Image 1 (cartoon, protein in one colour):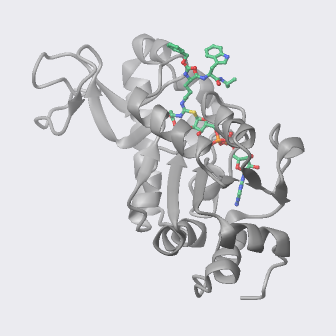
Image 2 (image 1 turned 180 degrees about the vertical axis):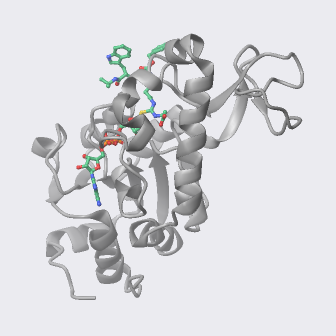
Length: 252
Ligand code: BV8
């Protein structure tokens, strides 16, 4: 792996950090072949805007359509595997001091890469909950119903993800805000920094005096405020960063 030019000040900063916090978005899963949230959807779903589908209104209007969109995304993720960016973050969790990983992603790829502490701000694609009770449902009897029905109350099942206009899980968001406020270095990786309250987290870190590192091939609203901007793919940059700071062999 050719040594990527990671700024030497950043290497020094990461080595000196007692606490590192990382926030990831859909971009970290792009190299696993999982389309980012705003990338044009393919095939049947090309005509839909994800921001319109990922809402309680869309589900109430057409529960079958929304359930099938998530079933399609589950299938895409099952066929995907963690990429070197996910694996590097699992390495960093093992070798850095205190490390917190916060993700906006619902694909579960960080856990499949070996990360243990993962704060899932927006839930998880592979969990379902009852739309009426707003309580998780682990399994349900086979049936042709789409969406399936809650075995407890007969209500419709829905994906256990946070839709636009819905609140984030309070405990998870509070832990994420703490991890941002206590970080010496905050890594913002593969996110367009457009969706709130997740997009607030790097600013909480900045206010607490942290160095903010943005890893993204494109500029975002965070870029002008970042201490370091590494303009490239996370699957390339994160293994190089892990290797140069913690001496880990990057995942080839
Ligand atoms: C809330 C789960 C209120 C579902 C998601 C008007 C009406 C209603 C709400 C609002 C409104 N205006 C503002 C809001 C608030 C709204 C919001 O922020 N909207 C935005 C669009 C303006 N937020 C909410 O609604 C949140 N809830 O505010 O509740 C409330 C308050 C009190 C009480 C009650 C209610 C809920 C937000 C959560 C929505 N759910 N996902 C699902 O996945 O189906 S968000 C969804 O977008 C994804 O989770 C994703 O995380 C998120 C952001 O997308 P990104 O992850 O950044 O991905 P994106 O595609 O955008 O960008 C990819 C990036 O990667 C790019 O920058 C690209 O350059 C980069 N990249 C590409 N390749 C690579 C790469 N980077 C590195 N390496 C690569 N190889």
